[in-house]
Image 1: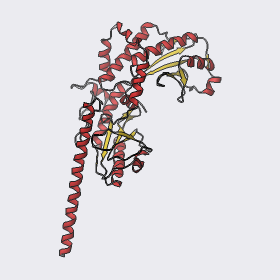
Image 2: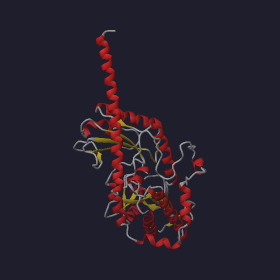
Image 3: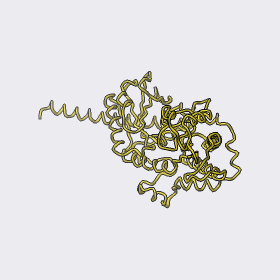
Image 4: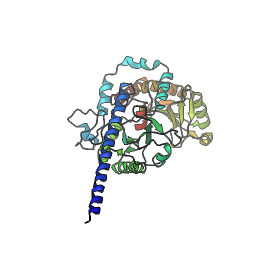
Length: 394
């Protein structure tokens, strides 16, 4: 071997070592900056959960996370001897504390409820407790265009990209038409929604996709362990499954049917608007927020065309508890509207067995709404919040 070859081998070794050291330094710096950013957000009242390091096993910070070696069966989680209290147990405990004079809670108007929920939805921020976050730090600031492959990726799970223009500055949601350049970029994949938990293969694909984008930018990147994230997704999904409550009040015409045109007229006079999903949504006039819906008693969806010709035995008022702020107040509003609509259509409100719902039964349903809302809050999923909308979407 000639002296020139020895020199080249030595130079190559030095170069490889230099790249490894550079990537290690960059990864440490990214991790430190993200940690500081989220801690700063918490101190300023932004309610951002703390980030986690990529090297550690990551468990949900939501109360109710299963231990690392726990079985994935929901029953075994409930039987765990540790500190875990399953959401259904929380609901029962809260329900036992509900007093009869709590009915006065829902007498206030819904304007503030809907306005607050709308304001929260307008301020998108990363949520490390429910998203798998991969961080990039390009060698020079980049615009949305170079992230096109990630922005248009279809992984079967909600994916968001955020960037910021410098350390300590706020994160900004990046879309295809977002202007400006960002010195730091993070990708955020939702771990669970109503479609289920993010699987290990899906998380592997996601991390590979972000790694490919990082390579085109000559950017170091920091990613969590995919296996740990898959476990975290399943634990989060179990928590949400126990608290995924939708309340239905069935309106039924016992000896006849309701003409579709008549139903539409009464529904719209009561504040409902025909929506794309084959239902009517009750729309708050000031904010445009949909708080609950009216669906066909039969499987046939409501459309402008079908309502002209159809007749139906009834309809169902539906409240999606996790997706609205102040669910008890919204339930009381829905109950009053349901009673008025039933009276207008000469129909009755019934349970699943077609038994009329009296005030006692309606009160028991209200207690269920309240206990579910309280249990959601206790596991840090505030009803109607961006976190709740994400976890209970899909």
